[in-house]
Picture 1: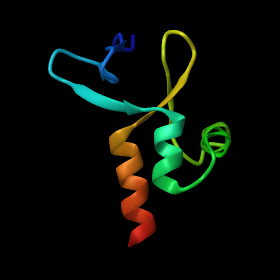
Picture 2: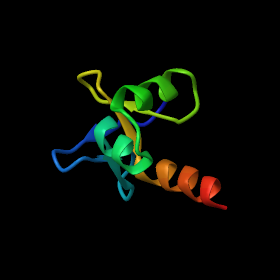
Picture 3: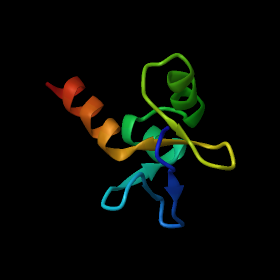
Length: 75
């Protein structure tokens, strides 16, 4: 069984007792890449970038995943 993910009001989520990670909104990711937020959601739908869903169904993007993609693109 997968661990329970809890999204906190500050945009972080907890997957275990010691793991907290910042989640970015589509708008924040769009600003990083210089694209429209709809493009970011389209990338997630096509599997170009990984995303998670909040309990209310909104897409969020792990900051570490976005940093990894940026490092790969800039290399």
